[in-house]
Every structure is written in structure tokens, then in C-alpha cells.
Image (cartoon, rainbow, N blue to C red; front, side):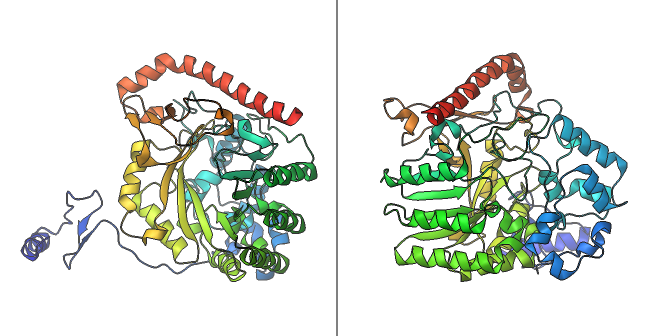
Length: 498
């Protein structure tokens, strides 16, 4: 914008006493000194909120708060415990809303560490309802949609990971990478969990599947498979959450991974870095991470931590301290893989605030996923077009290496940047994707690299004509999905039984 134009606008602004919004971007405003930016970076001081504002924690000391054992033993697991903690901070209507969701919609059982609850706004019931962390960690019935609570193609194992198990719990989807699900529990349960098929306790809506083999046997089978499969170089060690595995057992498994010559990248996946940083600050854990990082470095491999932070307010001094401790222990990076969730982080400002909070405190913004198509998730999910606009909106502010890629995890395909879509029917909300590799399921399929795979926008975001089309075809879609889900589970069980 040329200086003369800036002066004219400034004069108009002074005379009219209004803020002039330009057509360059929805949130762009002309500032008093003539600068024009849709987003302004400000470094925010991290704050550990005072947990004593909760009636149930008024007597909790700092030493107790910083104890991993205290955090684990004081997690909130049900409505009764939440009432005891909150006292009169919340209305009865909220508890009724929560109880109904637990009965009729929840795919994950309630499990909230004190650290995570403490970042939520409890100034009033209204503030608690609006809180971004509450919206995805403690969903209530009124959050969910009533027109399309689930997409007709929603599935308990929406990415068909179990169908691609090489051995039980080891998903081999990409040519050079595998996902090792060591355990089916976490220190905290997210409402939108993509592995709700297996992870956590059963709910009235979802009877969780269980691993058939004992954990030591499963881990041995994983190590054996990786030893005889030299094309695999990258292992994501996950679950569940590795923070729930006794450290000695986890260290032994990772140490043995590092003995396999073809393994060059190991990523430990843990939301607990944010939800329970106290775990990663324990002396024995820090010392163990240092031993593993040293061994990795000596043999030319890399060890990294992947965490899952969705809202800027979740970055507190304790979280930053834990991230720094892991870096000092020698891990290659601490990286964040978030999920785009409506009402949590789906404006440009929310997403950039989060990315800067991460980047300024030792955590690399890495990926943001579209929320997967699990049951009862439509109130969280974005359309592909919204995700593309978000990717466009955050470009140019962060360093290039710290600008996260927004990705769609397409069933039977894998991660694809949202602009890699091959075709997009915006009326019906169907996007079409291709891939450049075969999974183990397609080893002999000559058409795998030419086939187009589908992903679906939330139906309530479509134009009326698109919504009407889905009204006519929903029953057909649901029938097909039931068949796919059954086939996926049967395939995994056949692998297990063999």
C-alpha cells in the first residue's frame, strides 16, 4: 500500500472514528502507523495457572503438583470426581449435559490429569463451556450435532490401521515406516481419539477391542518383524501413550530397536508431554532418555519426541520445562502433531498463536491433521476447503522449517497435504486422492497407484443440494461402511490367528 493511500485512510479513520477493514483479508485492519497485517505476533509469557482456585485442590502444595505420582492418582475419571473438584464452580445443567454425553455419544471414557484441567477457564459455567481445551477433552452432549452427529462413512477404525497389522499392533502402511502400538492406554483420553477402536475403556457406545497377545509376546513379534524387514527404517512408538508404559520396559524396547541395523528414526509419541509433563521431568525418565539418545547418536540414528498440543493455553512453564529437559537429554527434536478441531484451533489467529507458543518454547510445529472420521465427531471436523484456507492463512509468519503442514489422513492412502487433492466435488463434499506407493494389502494390485480414494467433508457444511444428495444416499453409505469395518477387523484377526 503506497504512503499516500495510507495517509488518506488514516485521515478518514480519524474523521469517522471507525476501524476500516480492507478487502485483502477478513481480519486485516489498517493500524495507526499505516501497517497492514492480518495477524500480529506477540510473545506471551507462559503462565502456570493457580490450581488452588479449584475447591478440591485448595490445599495442594507445589511439591505435590509437580509430582507425577500425585498427578496420576488425582486424575478425574467420572462426573462424581469432577463435582468434588469443582465445588460450586459449574451449574447443574453442565453436569446433566456431560452425563448425557457419557451415556449416548462418548467414544472415549473420561480421564483428565490435573495438569490439563488446570489450563481450562473455570471463571463461570459459560467460560467453561467455551474453553478450547474443555471442548475436546471433556465433550458434552450439546457440543455434538443433532442433524449429522456421525458421517455415514464414519468408522471405529477409520484409517483401517488394524487391517494393515504386520503383526498384532504393528501397522505397516508406508513403505519405509511403521507404527508400533505398544499399549492401549494413555494418561489422558481425548474425545476425538483416532484409535478409539482400541484405546481406553469401553463406553456405552463403543465396546473396545482388546489385544489378543500378551504385551511381551507382541513386542517380541514386532522386533522380529522389523529385523527381517530391511526396507523399514522409521518406527513410531505409540499406543495409547508411551508415558503409560513403565520406563524400564519402554527403554528396553527402544534400546532393542536401536540394535536393528535398518532402523534409523525412532519417534516416541506422547500427549503426556503436555497433559502430564511431570512424568517426563522425573529423574529416571530423563536419565533413560539420555541413554537412548546417546546410543542413537553413536549409531547414526535419531530419536525424537512427538507430542499433541491443540491449544496455546496448554503451553505452560512446566510443559516448556519438560520439552527443554528432553532436548537437553539429547533427543533430535520435540515435535507437535495437532488436530484441527472446530472451536479449538480453527481460526488463523488461534493456529498461529499455538504455533508461536510451541516454537518459542522448544516444540516444533510439525503437522495439523484433519479430524478423522470416527463416530460422533462431526461437530469438530472441518471441510477440506476450510483446511486449505487455514494453510494459506498461516503461511509467511513462522520460519519455513516451523510452518506446520496441514494434512488429511486419507483411508488406505495416508497423510496428504490438503492441497494435494486430485479432485474435489464441493457440492457433495467428496475429495479424491491418489498415492504413489502400495501398502501390504496391495502388493499384487496393479491398479493401486491409479485408483482414486475418497474422503468426505461434514455434510452440514454442504450446500442444500449436497445435503439432499446425502439424505438420499446415507443408508447405502452406512451399509457399505459396516462391511468395510467388518472386513478390517476380520483381516487383523486372521493375521493374529496365523
